[in-house]
View 1 (cartoon, rainbow, N blue to C red):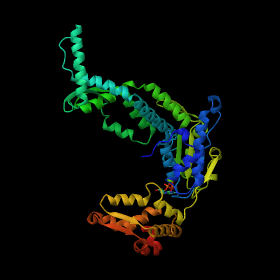
View 2: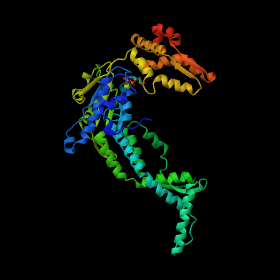
View 3: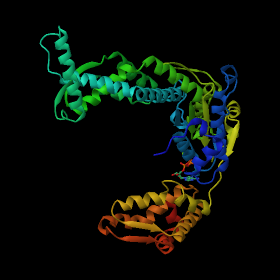
Amino acid sequence: MAVTISEAELTPTRIVAELDKYIVGQADAKKAVALALRNRWRRLQLPPEEAREIIPKNILMIGPTGVGKTEIARRLAALVHAPFIKVEATKYTEVGYVGRDVESMIRELLELAVRMVRARQLEAVQAQAAELAEQRLVDLLLPPEETPPADAATAQRRQRSRAKIKSQLATGAFDDRLLEVPVEEKPPLPAMVGMIGTEPSDGGAGFSDFLEKIIPTRVVTRKVKTPEARRLLAAAEAEKLIDEQAVIRQAIELTEQRGIVFIDEIDKIVAGEGRSGPDVSRQGVQRDLLPLVEGSTVNSRHGAVQTNHILFIAAGAFHSSKPADLMPEFQGRFPIRVELSDLDAADYARILREPRHSLLHQQEKLLCTEGLQVQFTDDAVAALAGYAHNINQATVNIGARRLHTLLEKVIEDLSFDAPARRGERHVIDAVMVRTKLAALAADEDVSRYVL
Ligand SMILES: Nc1ncnc2c1ncn2[C@@H]1O[C@H](COP(=O)(O)OP(=O)(O)OP(=O)(O)O)[C@@H](O)[C@H]1O
Ligand SMILES: [Mg+2]
């Protein structure tokens, strides 16, 4: 798992270094996002009245398909200590039409923040909750007393048996004992409601939220073994220790001050020449996005959220449109433009092998589970990269995604037979790569469909 790096340590250099572990090249884009992130941290070091005046500089990432735009967002999300969501612009519809309105992305960001803050608080009260749970376990294990301990002697005796049970608990003496534990749970929502809830329209989601709120929780008794009882009781105690209102308050603050929204496929909401049908609605989505990006208030079930300081990073390939086709106000709200470059054969070779969890690494690991050792030689990597580049040039340029399809073709048979070849060792060299790909690649029509 990724180690978490403290926020102060996340300098621009450090952020770029972290991104470098996963993404080849694209130095400009990495630099821009690193700087934007650091600027948020800097802003939060200032006194509130100064911080208020500093508006984030949103970023527009422009670059062809398959060169790492979404990948940068993904890796960035794992790095930041902030609510971060990645959404696709095409998933939204103009206000007034059936579908998801853009404000829902802010609500989604807030829900994420609520989960983050809750998890943090649960973590903080864990020791205390464990202690309380143990007390309750002891109570459950204690033989019932006929009369309340009236005199000092009985009270003392009872105290002693508690201590004894406690030490026996620690040795696991009660692990097989079945205990009745009260558990709070919500009755399942009727299936019909579930269906409404999964509708993309906000009305549906809001409705199931609403039902969840009004349907009371009920307490049921479950019969479980002691270790499970301990877990259930600790969870219940932790819930009780959490200040729900403080969670919401902090989550709203976190969203407003540090939230990041990555809007992918932004080029798809640019109206084309046609200016009819879906295009009109796309313009509408852009128009709806403007107030969010400029700073407005979004209502959520937890309260109002100000969007002024939320950082927006938008990305798009801009194949059939250009950033200049975006509404002028929109362009103005994304002052930082970074272009991601096309990848060449040398980049592909690096992408195959260098990043953590690189394609070749994944393949080797997968086949290893079958007891099959595979190894790709340097010239095999070079050959694969060369094919990727040539086919991208000759047909459609899909960037690094081409590597996935090519690699699959090369190892297809080996992968299929792997269970029968347990214990074998295979070296995949350039000759094998060529054997598998040459015929397919030679024919442009074939490669268009197969590779
Ligand atoms: N520069 C890169 N370094 C490492 N891997 C890359 C790079 N570029 C692309 N990839 C890999 O290629 C695949 C596609 O990349 P990604 O999703 O980032 O493309 P994109 O730029 O968002 O394209 P699109 O415009 O089509 O959304 C991913 O599996 C990713 O890991
Ligand atoms: Mg993408």
